[in-house]
Image 1: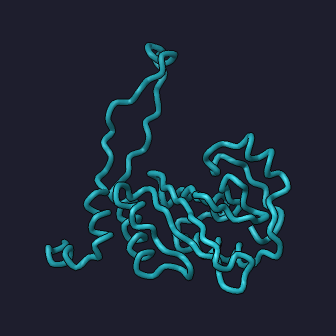
Image 2 (image 1 turned 120 degrees about the vertical axis):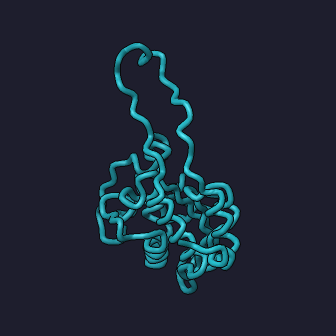
Image 3 (image 1 turned 45 degrees about the vertical axis):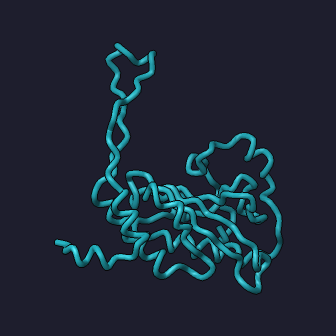
Length: 199
């Protein structure tokens, strides 16, 4: 059991996140008119459990105290919600992206870590890369079929750093225009096809 002294020794950012990371209320569920009186069951979203909230708190602390090279947790992004983070990123020295600044958006479902986080580039500067679409969506296998609960936010960050650092030519994916026009806002809704070992 935690003591008051243990809680006081926490870094201020994590203490704020823990304080505000109350489990969301179920509230009322809006039932579309075509389902009302139909007898059909309406699925409820799974609530966040103490288990996955604790996992997110642990990863938040790890990212705050020991971030991957060139990565910094955007503290403002976690003040109101522990389920959506922004990570500031700077291109690694000696790469095509040296000195460039990017932002990664992480969104966690109530099934995390069994379900991979939704991860995409956001903000004004989306890196020009063969596996990054101009809307910020990233073609990276560990974000979908190669995800494992043993992986973490830090694992994802390191994979994205590696992906950018190994790039030999700045260009968009060949189907960028079509994909951006037709894709779902959530990149996890896309059925990705992986053609090489760099994604």
